[in-house]
Length: 199
Image (cartoon, rainbow, N blue to C red):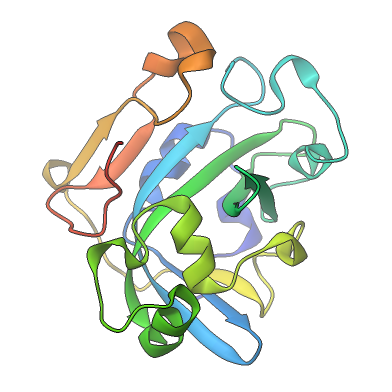
């Protein structure tokens, strides 16, 4: 069952980031259906988080979609080569977002291998937000995409993860955010080989 709009418009982005673990992310791009279970996320709060692109109410051509009502995609480019896929949450003008960092690949694995140029499945096929987007065919064309549509969406398959199976810690690659870099707003499924590695 696709997650409804109401799932995304709730106010607690940190709770949402945690709840997205165990849900399934899918894309249908160029006729290829690909996806798998979300195993790693990070929360970003527009209001009081120096790591968030919308901190201090920054509104630019890139961040404008963050001020939409929750339930749309925010895709941006880093290092000139990687597109990162984020889910906008909360009500309009709150600018909260959840970065999807990793999935366990399940559907369309052959297509993911093709997109990544892999001959066989390796843990880094979808472990990390940049390579995840390559595997799923996510790029700037999905900026602003409706997550209740048919191009990119998330399903609830009834998987319930126990508190003991979920780890939390600081987010990755945001040293510029000062004390906010230490917030335990990264969540991952313990023991999953698909969780990204801190480099």
